[in-house]
Length: 129
Image 1 (cartoon, rainbow, N blue to C red):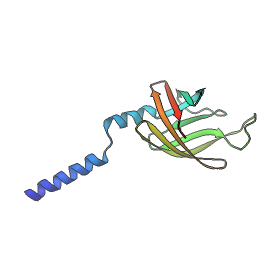
Image 2 (image 1 turned 90 degrees about the vertical axis):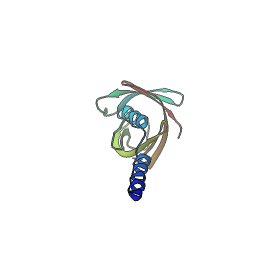
Image 3 (image 1 turned 180 degrees about the vertical axis):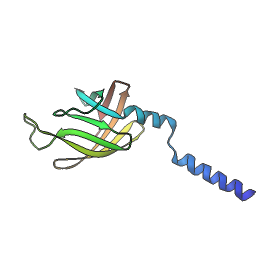
Image 4 (image 1 turned 30 degrees about the vertical axis):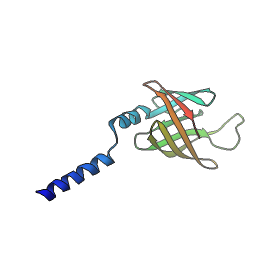
């Protein structure tokens, strides 16, 4: 009986240690979606939630499976007309910070964004890196 109790306690501890807090899971669900129509205010950016990404415009999607999709410039030249491409990367989320890794035309971009506010229609992000 003693060993059964220790075994059950060990399993329960492992499950609790590996599971995410309910609040973190809710936050992750809030940030998932397609985000378009960037509005900038210094280094804070606000986006509108959309059903899908838009061609020929900067936008991104945070997918619930850790996948990140970004529509952005497909080459080094930023002078209009700009050609856009879709790049697939990954993301993690902890303590209101999004860590993103996504390719671009010249290699890999890594972003560190602080989620300032998110609701059903908008997300505001502070670019930390």
